[in-house]
Image 1 (spheres, rainbow, N blue to C red):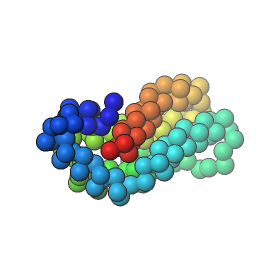
Image 2 (image 1 turned 180 degrees about the vertical axis):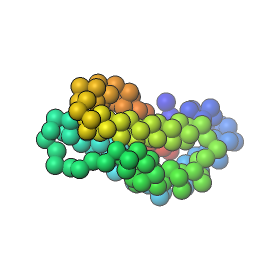
Image 3 (image 1 turned 30 degrees about the vertical axis):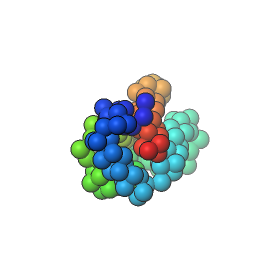
Image 4 (image 1 turned 135 degrees about the vertical axis):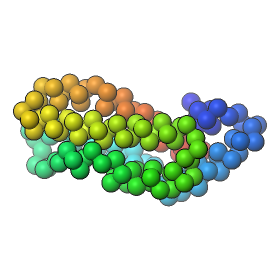
Length: 143
């Protein structure tokens, strides 16, 4: 589904032109491919961490902050400024926020010696959230 279709616009709709221009302005300040790769990398980092093969010191309270990564900075600045009126943007924002919450939860569970629960979390909703984030960013890139 393209972003304009997600917004509920057709190609002939005057509002579609406005949405397309807003999406172009917003995407100029974000390297979408890097953001997609960063979120794919998080899943690998969490997997490695749970397997005990990571030397990273992950801090759940820092991971939970969805505005500290590049995508989060963009969401709360240029993304909000240009796309804040659109449901698709809010879908991306909510998925990104929940992704950080789930990642933080996975690390917390592991640190509390509840690794089996953490692995279930990693195999669950966080995968769907990651997919949704990648899909919304891909939609944005397509404009």
